[in-house]
Length: 578
Image (tube, rainbow, N blue to C red; front, side, top):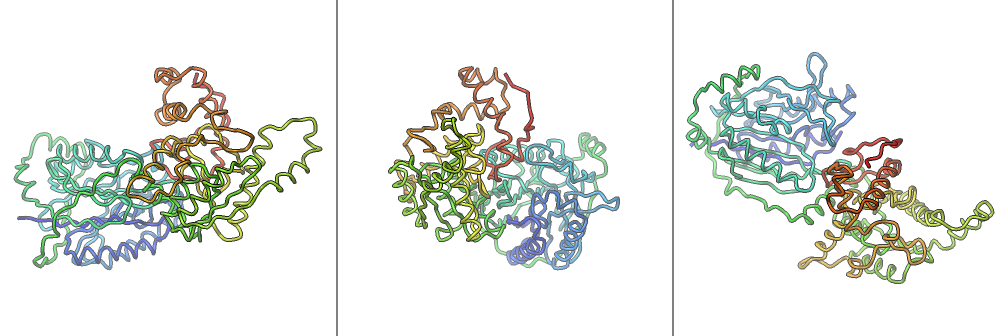
């Protein structure tokens, strides 16, 4: 048998931490060598972290990242390493690249060909597309290497490399998580492997970077398009896989066809590069390949939120977090996520009642804190609010109470949270959800004040579903039962309910998804069964709240279209969709 042993190093890089990322890469190379792997692969831009954004525009950053890849190269022996980094060409153009390293030197560099420029991606801003389609030979096994988006195109590098003889394709990625995305990945990888009769090793990074979360879930497909192995989701992992190359050869019965001549001619130069061989002593099988199970939707999203929160706090050096606990569903979920992300000892809750705060809200906030094992501090805002009213009374004379007084309460709470943040070095986690952010049902410099918006991309109805999962059988029931069924309220005036201002969330959330994520027109939204006046009201609220969203803290992306990096609309905007 002709066996190729591949190690897929699913690592969590930190953007800009070139020495730290390099150290981790070297550690995983050593680990792969202990498993007697032939090749160890690392994610897209593993040296720099992904996405490095405008760091790439700093010439010194480019030079430093190249210096690191050369240092790593000097430590590679007895194994071939494929490592993502930023390359600088002789004409000073910059490429998203994969270094192929063996026996202490860089054998070749592959440049990413298809540069995504949609959604969160902005690669046209930084990179030049590659033009080469190299095929590498290691111990007479033909290997194609490409990067992320390259594998999504049916007539892309994988097609050309396989026609040029590649038996295995190694595709390195930094592909951000969003709900249900693994299904699209699996469909694409199954199609590419079966169409080209080639094994595909798909490696993805893992970890949180600002709004993005990378979920790992690396996969290997055989030449028939069948899933062979799948790595852990939301965790660092090292997958060791033995690939039987003879199976590919018997299946393909490789022939030079007219299609092959045509494809290679149109593709440009297909180079064949030999990687230095090394002596491989007899080795035991790494064991059965494992296929990690797909998590149910609510658990998957929860884990994404935990990882994104954990890495944002850890990578930015915060000592802990403080959360305004209201006794409501949103703050309950954020507190639960925070505890699972960084530990209960690092989470503090601040309960700030007013004259409108119900006894039930206090009970629920304190029960939540007790269930989670976190410290909770109570500070009434009554006296502070009276001071504001007294100072403003002469200026507001003759005008009745309105949202001004409501927003003052939220802003007092925001100030108190920021005071604790300043004094103790804690990061304020805001608790607003996507439904609220969409329609502007939030107070600037009040409940929007803070450093990180954990559930900013989670619709309200999904918040409830995730909380029910968190409380499901076999887990600690940390979220008080009453929180799951009582009617949502901001408690800023007597008997206030969210439904006084907004359509019920089961009505609102489908409209938001249709308009924001699916880009549906007004007429298309009406076909979903929405009332015209309701749809108009919601669309107006969305469009007129852009100025608020621009001032909101970053939050974790879990849907196909999150606010911020995904959706960039002008604040000054007279266009109406109806």
